[in-house]
Image (cartoon, rainbow, N blue to C red):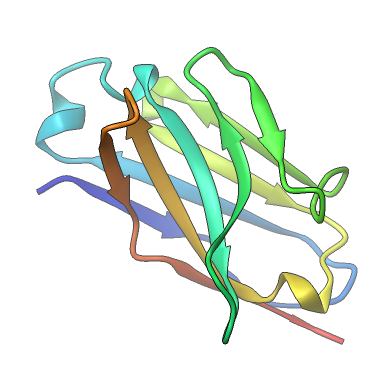
Length: 122
């Protein structure tokens, strides 16, 4: 199996911070540097809303963010650990959602994690 496993979600008060991690494992990633050539993304889905892109980091290290999280969230990756991170600061109640990790290579190989719940209270 190929898996992305998110961790770090939880309950925080508005203005607080959380750090999410997503670790990739499985046959594809065990072959070598597959992780390093893929784009890693964080997405989220709030109740009653569509899944949306939160942050992306490419194989070359380029990042982009949803306007709603710019200046508050930071995405990074550690290819040696097959892991992508999302540092979330100044959290708002509107950030409450299930956060999903995604791996994409060549716009075809597409792998999703199971999600981790982030709840931000007022």
